Image 1 (tube, protein in one colour):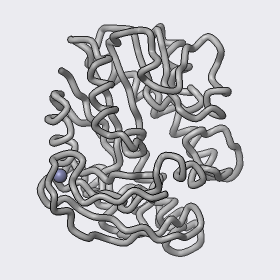
Image 2 (cartoon, helix red, strand yellow; image 1 turned 90 degrees about the vertical axis):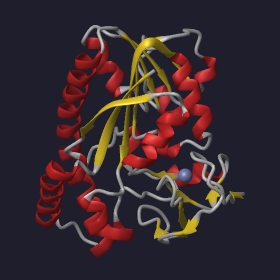
Image 3 (cartoon, rainbow, N blue to C red; image 1 turned 180 degrees about the horizontal axis):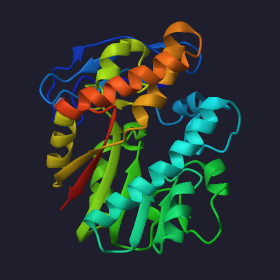
Length: 289
Ligand SMILES: [Zn+2]
């Protein structure tokens, strides 16, 4: 079944406006409508498959979130970028928190948790997908739903490219806020549809990833989301590799072939423009209570 709604889940504005129709180029080329809240600027995939029906849209060999496929150049670049990304995320975590109790919400196969464990963190995960959970090393505690977690508070909560997939948006944000220690820090990464690469590729922008992405966030919409959850955004940081990876996929969606050089150029242009505008392809938001 699909879910239809006309009220903004974040700011409660009851007047969502029709927005860009977007094709699922990753999957079966089904077209999905989107709607924008003109008040907080969040874009919604609407109507959207419900929690049961969305599962089939994830069932593809190339879906990257569990990331254990090895293959072409994109996979190799992805793997190199992933290691650099882990080091960068670790550096950011260190910058904002001394605590070592870390929860990764939507931890996939646990690669990031594994990395952080080797750096001395006491790590835990939440991952709803049973296949992904089976890949997680047995010494890392992981549950399928945050409500099952016995530990009450964490110094650091991370969620990288996950919140845009979650049906129960406000409930999830509130649950994560509850699990955050009074002095804890929440690192949340999201694609940014206001980035140059998003504007450039339009409906071919891979960051839309409909219908798996239920929400398409701007910085303004994330500020409203944080405010409604009682959290403060203390900083934002770019994920500079994302513009390259997203441009590679977007080129393929737009032209049907892999234009590595053009994708590299556009990834570079997006980051260069964002140096002035702050509108990077993806952003990590640093949130506190
Ligand atoms: Zn809104």
